[in-house]
Image (cartoon, rainbow, N blue to C red; front, side, top):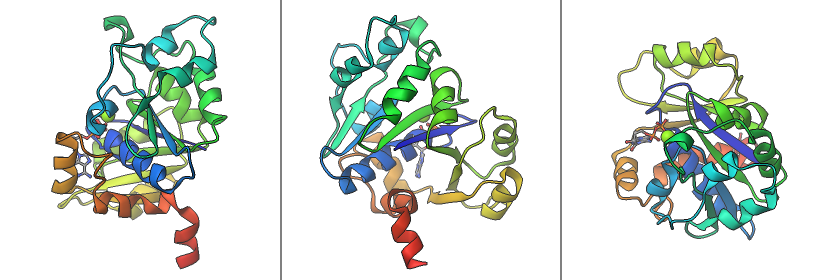
Length: 230
Ligand SMILES: Nc1ncnc2c1ncn2[C@@H]1O[C@H](COP(=O)(O)OP(=O)(O)O)[C@@H](O)[C@H]1O
Ligand SMILES: [Mg+2]
């Protein structure tokens, strides 16, 4: 199953949600665990993964047809218990943004994975990130309940299958407003939490996944458990 996380606006919490989801799935999935594909460039830092001077997803996407989908497996890095990371690793200024050249092959390869796969498609969904957001089995829009973000979400070229709402005090827009405007369900609500912020800044989100984040993402990680309890 491929879960694509994306956002119409930077700073929404997309990378935090994607990394949190991947770490939570890695804990619940049978071996060999879960995979996080990073098209944002931030996941390695958030998970505290040292990046060797080796090619990453950026180079794979920029490569010609000679580089096979199988080569993706050789790019994976260890990112903690049961979690592997396909780091972005830009090759240079030209590769700093996900190109769409081989996006469809990436979508096919990640969709065919037997492990649960989370993709951090970044903000503004473009290039390969857009292709994954459009084609993934689960397409999660990560959104702060803010009018400007909502406007952009409405104008996005992709319709998500669900929303992860990153909530903060003092906002007048809530879950209902977002569901009414976008016409898709809010699958999880993640509160801004200083424990999460500190884990991100320390690069420890994967290894010490904060309880609040794990709990908030549970309806996506264990959708059946949520329904059974309802
Ligand atoms: N649930 C949260 N609690 C506290 N801080 C958060 C949370 N989600 C995101 N942040 C903070 O907000 C900032 C932007 O988050 P990030 O995931 O990088 O957004 P995006 O990937 O959408 O640009 C980061 O500094 C991160 O630490
Ligand atoms: Mg990000």
